Image 1 (cartoon, rainbow, N blue to C red):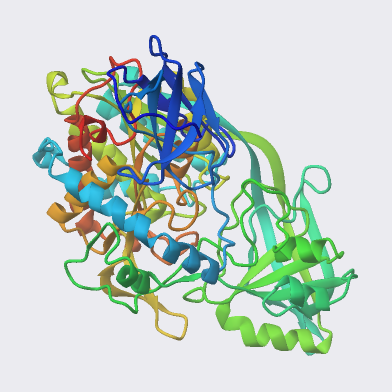
Image 2 (tube, rainbow, N blue to C red):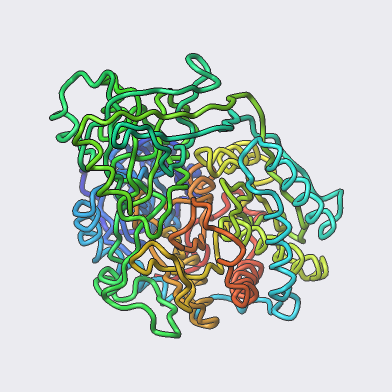
Amino acid sequence: MTTISEKTYSEVPEEVTATRGDHENAVKISWKPVKDASGYLIFRSKNFSGLYLPLKKVGKETGYVDKNVKMGVYYWYRVHSIRKFSISNPGRKVQGWGRMHMPSGSESLISLIMRLLKSIPHFRQTRNEAIKLQKDLPASTDVTHLVPANEEMFNWVKGLCDPPHRRIGSPESLKAEAYLMGEFQSILGKENVFNDQVPCDVYHAEEWRLDIEKNGRMEKVEAFYTVNTGMQHETKPNGGTVTGELIWAGDGTPKEVKQLGDDLSGKIVVANCRFPTFPIGLLMKVFDGFYYTSDPKQSLDAKSKRNFTFARKNFPAEYTEEKNKKSIYWLVQERGAEGLILILDNHPGRVNTHWGPYDGKMRSMPCMYVDNYMAAEMKSLTENSNKASLTIKGSLTKGAGQNIYGILPGKSKEVILVSSHHDSPFKGATEDATGVATVLAMAKTWSNIPFEEREKTLVFVSTTGHFYAGKGAHEFAEKHRSGLLKQLIMCINIEHPAAREFIDDGEGNMGHNGEQAMNFVFVNEDLTSIAAARRMLQQHQLEKAILLQSSLLGAVPPGEAGHYHMYTGVDFIHWIGQPNYILTADDTLDKVDVESLNPIANGIADLIGTYMNLPVQEDSSALDLSGRLCSGGVA
């Protein structure tokens, strides 16, 4: 690079912007031209405060595309103008990143831990910057006296849980959506509540059954169908029955399946299906409590772990890929297997009603789940050439769910989005009736604040299609990003809060241990968001709530916030409870920790109040959405 004199002059580049997830493996940096500038220097860092290294010297053009970016990494840029042999001070620092994708959950534990260990220096620098920024946050608007009480919030939970499930496009879901529409309208007024249709395939299993030969006789075995399997539009839209000889595939790894041979026609494969065990306690030690850990009862220690029962190690969701090469489903299907039986190997309790993977892809070969307490029996049944038959019958039709949203106007057009999803495979009392109840509570709370005191506009949304690859949140973001969400400054997303912890007694019986389930609060690498969430948790001391970097499990965390971040570039604070019974029929009303509904809602209201009082920047031609206070001189 040409050497430039350190002499400075006053023509600082203005209106510097960087794209936020708009381009695959690239960030576009732009700025307003500087009069008489002969060129520009672009510097880049992975940290807000540096070290900034030279990235590119350009001529009089006012933009540059950085193609050397990695998915899941946030970059900071600054631009200097050049005149003859002088260089200006930099324009404001801006943050940008390449397009991100939802993780499938197939990353190995060793790979994940190695990735996290390498990130520690960067993580600590980011945390230190956020802590410095925290003292400059504006005071939050105090609305605690307006937040609905526990019982009122629990009534919303019960109302949403009236149908047996809320599967997208089903009559039961339509009933729940009508209820939710009515509640939003009663709070915000009919004129401020809207709905968007979300097209989908409506998969409805009317009959399912697993029969296995025992001592020469076919006997029914307790099992549950794997969603979106056994029916496909082109081949068998109404499903059917398959029969074959049982064959054991161990842990269902590519190596073990390969050992079965290339021809599995006439076979029904049986294998373990394990869920990742996440050593959260150990990582808390390594990361010194992450951004912040709120644990007033001191329930968490170095031995704390969590089985991620939403991610199957050998049967990952396929959000952006086709036929994952490590998926046991495709490994046996391409070898001609008739069907697949998966043992929920380390899932707590005698549970077979697992709903996943929920990527919205229809698969023709039937698959069924059995609980982990049947592992020994299932393996022994494969050793004697026993036969089995799998039945999944029903219908596969075209339909639609509804995104429901309400608008609470504020003095500014800047928007704070408060979100959750309302669909659920079963009762879904915690997932996500408690999340929706919290969104309704925020709508009611802030609707009681006079317009003159609401500095920003609030949009409350409850999406469908979470169990259809997040289709509802994705489409809401895409549809409204240039309109309603054009000046979106923050997404506060709430999923399965206030969930009671239930544990396995070792015999398959699940019992409440007197505690609340672990809560992860993910925040993307935005200093203001980290600072605001830290302050909220410090002040409210909510139970077992860990403030984490959003890249912990992949480029974005699981849940709706990830979709809004990917498709609008918005910063987010994402509360997501971690009970081990989500995605199962055990997620019933008794799992709700009613007494914590209001305290958690108070914490969410506090976050909204902080963002209400941040400086409004809607009149600037380049709205600063990254480090909103950072451009004011915090170094």
